[in-house]
Image 1 (cartoon, one colour):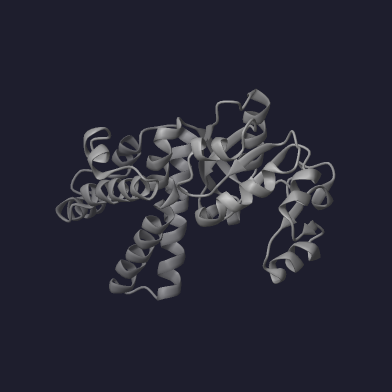
Image 2 (image 1 turned 90 degrees about the horizontal axis):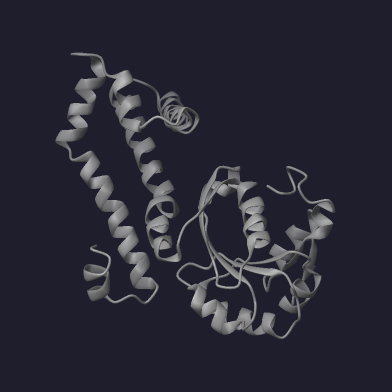
Length: 261
């Protein structure tokens, strides 16, 4: 996103990537990025931010590499379930930020939540907003709410894909070809989402604008309500939020009594 929007003065050459998987490094090099097999080189080259896009099980090793190299760059982690405290304990004196993005970042339509560490400052907030705002929406929340962000927008694309598939199935059942049904379903979801974002109106009001008395839409809405569509969706977000908490080491007792989940 930053490169596509030309938000980095130096373009791809101002970014350094490290990986142990050489084909990934080669793809990065082909796009003009600097590459390295060591994390220390990434840190020493970083002018403003270092992004930790790694699995949680290797975060400690990566942090050990980073701690050995002096840098004033803010450390931004997208490792699921790795808390700010864990990052700050592993990187004493460093400014850290946690981010939970989602897969639509691949098409510039991400919904990301982020939380600042104790030492992070206003400039760091602007940096993370710029980076993740370049690929969609980035919203600041308290760290305790990042599990809810995971359950909603982190896992949400899967729910929406299922909904699009179900809409398409309904279209096929009603006589449309699969190709036509899927394109209409996807565009319908995209268009409805844009109406929510652009108008700022409550989704319920927008729904009411489509449902005329005794018409086709209210008949469909009734069928969704009979199938517990709303309650099932709420339960899906709740279940994913609980699972995120469990992966983060929160006990089932605390999840139930402290978070009411």
